[in-house]
Image (cartoon, rainbow, N blue to C red; front, side, top):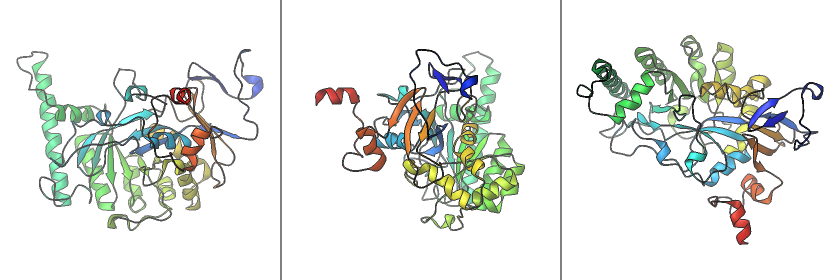
Length: 389
């Protein structure tokens, strides 16, 4: 594979790929080269979202709350993750706008952003139902009220969008700017994918019902009971971002979690990817979820696809990431052996053709295995830190 200016410019058998004479060569003999892992649901970066003032907060932007020096970003690099959908929590019906981040080494959030061809910053809209957003007013107390409150907001967003269209550029007729409605209009216009927390089978069907009613694109997250309603998910052509645990616990609505969930969704024809929900699964052990799903009946190919290309499609970034192809971003990892073996380590992680993790480097090794200092925030520059010593 040949990388230049952050892109893959050639990949294949040595005889078929032209290698520049002055190229820096990395010997991967005996190692496994694969695309960088894509985490479709993460909370790294000490991210914060909505507060307790209300259950509906689509105006909140996690862009304003991520600490790019958070040690968990380096730990994600150590786990081979190159792109992550960083989201606020699921304690709200609408908890804010997510970010799809390249986990580059950066000093500000701008260094990690993914910019779309039209200039927008890549990200989705976080929603949730089930137990998490149910509490005392102004939050809903029942599942039915949760859905009713969401419907009310989307109806307002449709009315807001209609008023803007009817104004036809006349500033005297435009409605007062509403940041909450702006976020939801982006959802209605297909510019922002809904990333929806949902566990129980009936809650899953409620999400499908809302998506059909308001015609928005949605990804189901967690989907604990997905195996119970896999055919309905497949019929709706809705993808899933799932988590695979071998020792589940916590909330009662996850009581039917099974490592066979991925295989059941695959059999039904559902597009699905894995996620960490970091720190539910530590980002350093993300690849282990694929191995557990294989134990649950999923094929090896589909398991590896769910860590890479499936999640790229879920984030609508499939033209840039998720596979090692000419023209795509040079995001890749080197492994010591079989990706699904518990004995395998991520040796190197590269993003846009730059190495961001090297297990042979003592600083990076600390983030990979833990120990004193592994939880400390990254300094503004490792080079400056070394010069200071």
